[in-house]
Amino acid sequence: MHKHVPKINLPLDIAENKLYTGNTSVRLTSIENSPEVPRFKDVLTGMVKELDATIKKPDAIMQSIVLGNGADAHDLMIALSKAEIGVNVTTQMVTKVVQAYDKVMQIQV
Image 1 (cartoon, rainbow, N blue to C red):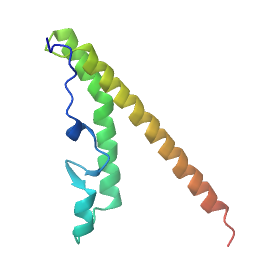
Image 2 (tube, rainbow, N blue to C red):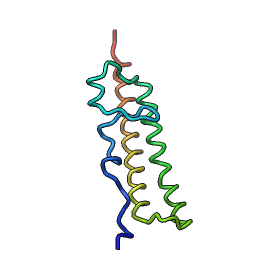
Image 3 (cartoon, one colour):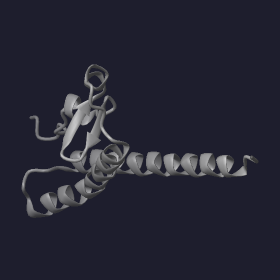
């Protein structure tokens, strides 16, 4: 009866309140109370690794479907949507950073 229910865990899947710094995630509320703030490089590296994992997940689910290991089409569609959104957000972020850099470079001293 529950064969076609997507296997999602919203508290774990929603990462809007976390900064990924490599293998661990740091909650934003813990940064306010902590004297040690994660470095920008670590946060950026963690975000890139998280995007890479999100992009690779549909391939793993597709392989699981082909091999008959219990995944279904709903899981694949959710993973594909997450990957698409991740790529779109990353593309927009890069565009905004490049635009900001261009504006800074146009400032006359």
